[in-house]
Structure formats: structure tokens, C-alpha cells
Image (tube, rainbow, N blue to C red; front, side, top):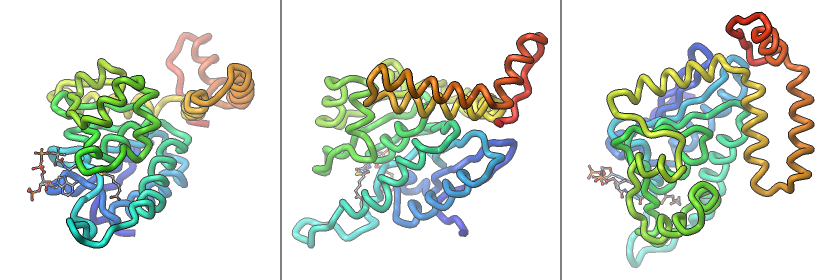
Amino acid sequence: MAYDTILYDTAGGIARVTLNRPDRLNSFTTRMHEELRDALAHVSADAEVRVLLLTGAGRGFCAGQDLSDRAVAPGGAPVDLGVSIEINYRPLVLALRNLPLPVVCAVNGVAAGAGANIALACDLVVAARSASFIQAFCRIGLIPDSGGTFFLPRLVGTARAMGLALLGDKVTAEQAAEWGLIWKCVDDAEFAGAVDALLVHLAQAPTKGLAASKRALYASGNATLEGQLDLERDLQRELGYSADYREGVGAFLDKRAPKFTGR
Ligand code: T3D
């Protein structure tokens, strides 16, 4: 599939997806969702890929749904947004969460509406200091979708989640990092370098172990302690059979740097 609204490339174990409609702050269209689905299927099928980057082109990360992509107007016919969620946003969130490798979101600028929550669906969110997060939904009579009502209270607690959802205030990258909404805020001048260093590190890490950590942490949300201990036992058993575990222990004992293959 040829891509018009995203950029996709892979090199050195790193897959990079860049939302690429900068004049519309990379807001989502139906076409962009189709292309994202296709790109994520490639990531999933490519055994060489060990980390995925999601970022935006230009001054914004993503302004959520492109509000001009469908006919909505005062007095006009109502639209079924459930279809859009079912076909586009729900599968995108689940695809990012379920990928068996780390997904890094580099938030280069404003992340609003579904753009903010797609970022939060990623495993490690790094934002440039000039970036911001806006739960813009309340400004147009909607709820935080794309997992927003799930992620926000879990990340920042109900009080802050409620403030963000009901007021739609802009949260700076610095504030987002302080609140634990994201992993890190990095000065703009150092942003690209910091993201690249993180990607290179993750592309050389024991991928299976990272994927299992991701799976276990996400599973813990609704788990009992007993259930979680069972899951940890099962995953650790699987990882004990991996080549990367043997390499990690061997490298430690030999006092050398490990060379992980992701297997
Ligand atoms: O509908 C469904 O399928 C259900 C799912 C919904 C999910 C959602 O995401 S709903 C929420 C949709 N998003 C928004 O409501 C955010 C709208 N955008 C903004 O509030 C502002 O653009 C920002 C706060 C994000 C950034 O403000 P600012 O001042 O930095 O930029 P700007 O001037 O507003 O935007 C630059 C251009 O991008 C501008 O176009 P122009 O005037 O230069 O021709 C603007 O219209 C366009 N743009 C920005 N966001 C969107 C957009 N065009 C279409 N849709 C957008 N979401």
C-alpha cells in the first residue's frame, strides 16, 4: 500500500511511523487510519523489528480526529461516531498495546483529543518541552476516547483525570512528566537525539523480555495478586528458555556487554 498520510521506514531493528499531515497538525482521517493499520501489520509481521516509534511531522504530534473529514454541521444530519471508534480508534489502540515489542511515542508538539490518547496508548512516551497534551473532547461535546477514560485515571488518578476530561486544559510536557502521565520531557534541542538513543537502546535489548514485561504490567490493571504471580511465573518460565536470557547471564558472568538477538 502506498502511504499518503504517514511515513514508514525500518532500519536497524527500528520501525518509524510518522503521522504526516503537518498542515492539519497530523489529525486523523479515514485514510490515515487505513495506512496506520497497514503499517502496524507490517511491524507485526517483520521479525527484524524490535522497537516501534510513533511521532508526528511538523510542529504538532496529532490533533485527534480531523474534524473536517466528515459532514458535521449545526442543524445537519447526526453522524454515528461509534462506527469510527469501532473501525478506526479501537483497533489502533489495541494494536499498539498488543505489539510484542516496545512502542515509543515521541510527542514533538501538541497532542490533542485522540492524538493525546493514542500517545498514552504507547509504552514509553517522551515529549519535547514545547509539546502539550489536551483532552479536547469536552470542547466539542465528546468524551475522552481512544482509551482516555482508561488511561487517565490509571496514570494520574481520578481527580486529575476528571479535571483534564471536564475542563480540556492544556497540560505542558513538563507538567505531564511531573504527574506521571508520560515517561519523560526533554528539552527541544535534545529531543531528536534523546529519542534516537532510546530507540537504539531498545532495538538492542532483549525484546522477548521487554514484551513480557509490557504484557504483565498491562495485565496487572484488573488482576489479583495471585493471578499476577501466576502470570509472572509463566512468563518467567518462557523467558528462561530464551537465548537472550542465556546471553544476559553469560555476559554478566564473563564481565562483557551482552549481545541480545531478540530471541
Ligand atoms: O469523530 C470521530 O471519529 C470520533 C473520534 C473523535 C476523536 C477526537 O479526536 S475528537 C477531538 C478532535 N480534536 C480537536 O477537537 C482538536 C482541534 N484542534 C485544536 O483545538 C487546535 O488546533 C490545537 C489546540 C490542537 C492546536 O492549536 P493551534 O493554535 O496550535 O493550531 P491551529 O491554528 O488551531 O491549527 C493549525 C491548523 O490545523 C488549522 O488550519 P488552518 O487554519 O491553518 O487552515 C486548523 O484548522 C487545523 N486543525 C487543527 N486541528 C484540527 C485541524 N483540522 C481538522 N481537524 C482537527 N482536529
